[in-house]
Each structure stands twice: as C-alpha cells, then as structure tokens.
Image (cartoon, rainbow, N blue to C red; front, side):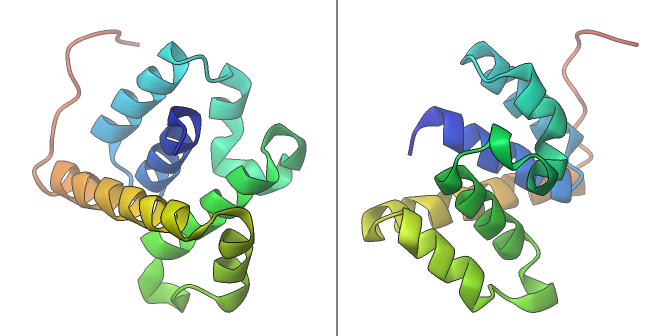
Length: 122
C-alpha cells in the first residue's frame, strides 16, 4: 500500500474513533510525506469532495469506515465489491490489516487517555 493511501486510512479511522493522539501523529506524517493540506482538511467529508480523492482511495475510505463501524451494518456487499474491484487479493489483505491495525491502536490510545506530545498549542 502506498504511504499516501495508508495515511488516509489511518486518519479516517482515527477521526471515527476520536483518537486525538493518532490523529495528531498521522496528520503530521501525511503532511511530511507531501499529502495536500486541502485533502487532510476535508477528509472527514470525502464523499462531498470526490474530485480530491481517486477511485481506489474512495473505495479504501469506504471500506475503512465500514470496518471501523462494523457493529452498525457490517461491511455491505457494495462496499466490499467496490474495494475488490480496485484492489487485488493481496492488496485487499494489506488494506484490511492496515484498517484493523489502526483500529487497535486507536482503541488503545483512547482507552489509556494517551496524551498528545508536547508541541504546538492554541
């Protein structure tokens, strides 16, 4: 998985899980790796900005949301089929592992009240 896509996955899951520590870390990483600030700003509303995200990115973001919020509706067939149309089997496994991994880290950070590192303040 390209780092650009992995960072979008990590950030979107972290938004859904309200993990400030992970959001801080992964948005900084994404910016350092050249991710457009505009894409980071509107990531939570990515469906309303389809021109900013590629078709594979949109499929990965949709799968990220479904897996992160799996207790609500599971992973709908259309979400899975869209992901499968944009990624081969090996890439799908990597995508699912990335989504699962960030969800574990989010839960650990939120459960332990992981504080933000010292840095910029308001």
